[in-house]
Image (tube, rainbow, N blue to C red; front, side):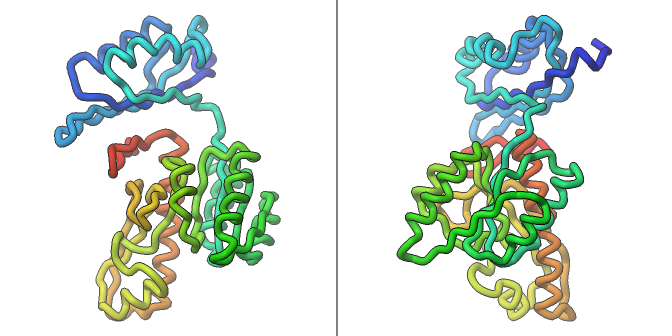
Length: 290
């Protein structure tokens, strides 16, 4: 197939299963039978867990069934290999809800990337426990929900957040420096579809003024970590990390500036990996086909 029109329908197949002979051949044969053309494929065999991971992008031919029927047809193959699998429409634009507190650098970076087409998602809402970032959301034409929170109102506030997630059909929630700890119940409801950015190369320097803590300890490397949200604070499966070298000559304010840049980069990269279905959970870790 050389005519690009034949690839107007493109799908992404993600799967994991116990490692065994014939998985790649089974998938490739099935796609050929359905008149599909493989455009990209990556595999990983985790010898420690004995599981096999695969991400395949393919174009649909003229006689290829629609997504629902294609998934039904793939069922016997998936059952044969005991696969945990998902079939995604590559042309579908993921719907994302952003959460933020007072610091606005990650929010601004994500909204800017979306506005110039560098991040192919639809931001359906911004939720915040403070009013500070409303003007930024207004500038980009995104609905802003100010939901104040206190320890006493936390359950009610998070119920409102989940209601907005449901009403907007948000597929991903991004904590773009949202400085509140989500309850275990909310973490469970958003499992595998909520990403947080942490201001360190985990697990160091938790709590207030992390860059001042880092400066006081004379660190030589600072970093940022993006991970899935779990009930274990800042210990969810890691999606992406980045570091930069610093020295004794960097005051806390300079560390903070460098850290903000890293947070922007790492969070945007993690969101892109997720919405492009490049991330597959492997127990408490991730397989990222970057």
